[in-house]
Image (cartoon, rainbow, N blue to C red; front, side):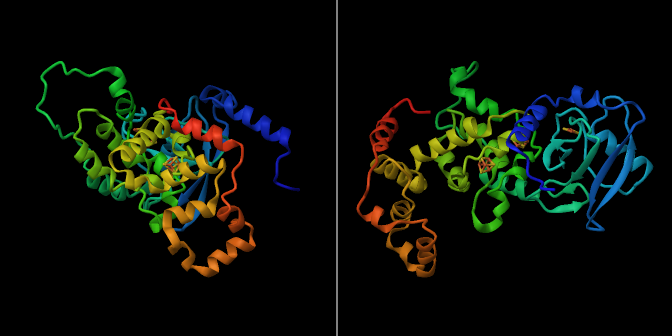
Length: 333
Ligand code: SF4
Ligand code: SF4
Ligand code: FES
């Protein structure tokens, strides 16, 4: 039987997930009923399976505690506050990043460590790469003028984005979910969690522009593809893309236009032609150097990914007028 869902079934699944609240999940179990918990163990590089008796309002953390107390005393996992405050208990449950202390159990669940960080043991990951990056970004405030005294003349609007970033509990769920971080050394992207840390002060209007530029240069922020995966999993509901990464990108464009070479080229190609012409974009960003990898150019040609005739004749569509109008609007988000 095929694993693919029919269109109607997919919609139904989406609806089910939407209403799959903690209370709804818990209402499916009776006390004492057995749930299946599979845990990825690092020593055996395999998944260990446990049967755990359900108890009312059981969370993933309660199931892990039961396993550690009754079946696998050497199971390594982290937690501290037990109440969505410290961010230490993040794991992946059935492929989704969650806080173990906040997520209700499911009848059949697989618990794994976060991705994109080295595993120390079982569910415990090494946060050092994140901490090193945050230290490198120096996310603190340097004032260009002396402290104005209390209360400081700041408006809610000025602090809107920075204060959202201040809700971060440093759980690293976003870092684990980010596909660009998953590419490893292929990019120099700092990742969503370090950017949220930086946003706390870089989006504060009191910070020195030279200091903010210094930090932003180290972020590789334009590698972010705005896929919103980070935002989907953030347990603190921080609008990571719209209120942290996009405003940081805007700040980088204003302070260092050369950093946004790719974005600026994309904007001008769309404004001139009304569509994304990949070869025009690459030529604008990399110049004639882009043609030096001939086998790659040929591959792209054969697969129909680029069309030199369209590029060199500078074909335009009717959408270019609307695109130009939109991009020239001063009130664009
Ligand atoms: S929006 Fe950017 S930071 Fe967030 S997951 Fe996607 S690529 Fe990563
Ligand atoms: S931004 Fe959200 S997901 Fe990322 S570390 Fe902070 S709280 Fe966790
Ligand atoms: S234990 Fe602190 S957030 Fe889960």
